[in-house]
Length: 210
Ligand code: GAR
Image (cartoon, rainbow, N blue to C red; front, side, top):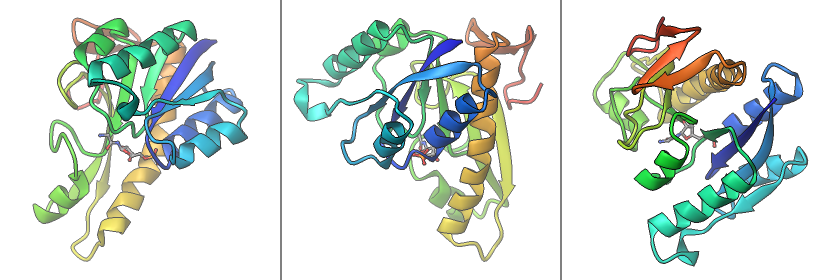
């Protein structure tokens, strides 16, 4: 059983999906810690309810980004974490943090990367008149939202959709694909080598399809 940490900033619906997948045995791993950079994150209550150790690290406590990241990294290493799962953690990680967990950090980003890295992805897709949007699970490297793609889910965007409808449609897919990818990692089926993702020894295409 691998030891997993989940980093959050808000609602925690992806965290909940991971908690449920560990509890049901779909993920052969234990979430040993939840870290938040926001004391009000609802995900902290989810961790509490599931009996998972949780900690809040506030940026204002530290002189700079890097010292905050090193405090989080020290804590995760004390917890002997095998995998760091970013689930709506709205902070860009510093290179030193990423180097300390190289090949062991996954992120989920609400767009069909490489389209729309960064913020406000839904509004950007709607404004561009895109007929589809989606979400991407990828390994984290030192560039924002640019690491090797593991899996994507696409959803349609209809002309009369509200922003909330598109968000809801994408989030319904996120809670399906993120546990799947974490399960692969926990089974030792998924690796990052030379900035490329491999599943069962086969390199994944850049769009996340084998
Ligand atoms: C998710 O939709 C995730 O894709 C997004 O934050 C949301 C968190 O929701 N992540 C990013 O935007 C990262 N750039 P949740 O707290 O309900 O899981």
